[in-house]
Image (cartoon, rainbow, N blue to C red; front, top):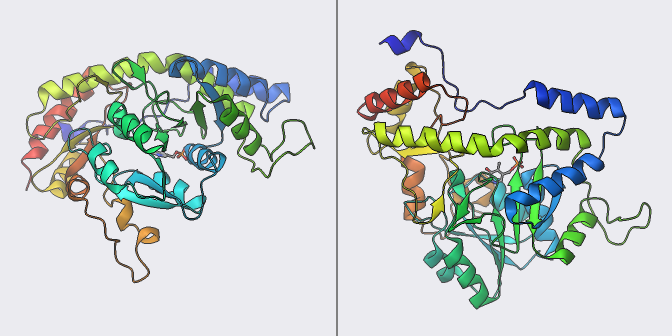
Length: 369
Ligand SMILES: *Cc1c(COP(=O)(O)O)cnc(C)c1O
């Protein structure tokens, strides 16, 4: 019971260090705070993470997804295949441009979209596939890209949780038509709020730059109708500092996961697919017994934990049919994951002591009833 008096281990510990604060103050003192040279430098530096793709910074991960779908010209009448087992933002972006999300199931090991289910869901209206690299595990991009090519579909990677993840040595965000990252504080790196779109297509990158800034490249020479989804130079300066730490943080997350993998026996630890480089945005176990009891026990032991996501998107209110029922989706692995998953702390600032407590706690709570 020694754990009861120990300090609470939070599920995430966003870093706002002296370097981030100094960077923000430097930009604030410069008087040049909106999108400018810091954003341009952040984009150039982020490109190294995605095999030199064009990078377009925006004000959030959701904006990144929405702007990408806008830039690709998707809207009413179009269907976009998405996993239901994700954060709502994935499907929200589809709806925000007036297109329809078509929900498909996940593979139970990776928690990512199931390529066979994707192929079965394609109709003449399908325009794109949106794989989500959930929890930092890369989706099966090799198989998904083959399907997309066969059917002439765009692929928009939701990489909001997967900075630096890779499959067979290729980084996420460099496979699809575009990749979308988030820099929300709890993500693997942050810019307070922010997002990045990555693409190999120079023309698409230009359209994205126009769309994020009222359709202007030159001031008051508006070329198309655009939004204001710009990142500030203050945010970009913070993101640049974080980016220099990302590789070390990822290594630490992976080392932490390895310790938990080897120590946890009371719950099902997360498998990693062949060739996948998992960056452990979340360390997500399955609890096959009473999950609520396990979660409560962990909390009593001072170990932060959370369920991502208790309700699959297709069961959220905006995605129900007019009579308030879920649509015709059959998503058994999604339902099972939503009922079983539990995420434990894996963030890079955990001490060896805290890691021990998390593993011991998981083993104790795994048997909780
Ligand atoms: C966080 C997240 C987003 C949205 O990013 P924001 O920066 O919060 O808008 C989209 N998709 C997934 C899977 C996420 O985890």
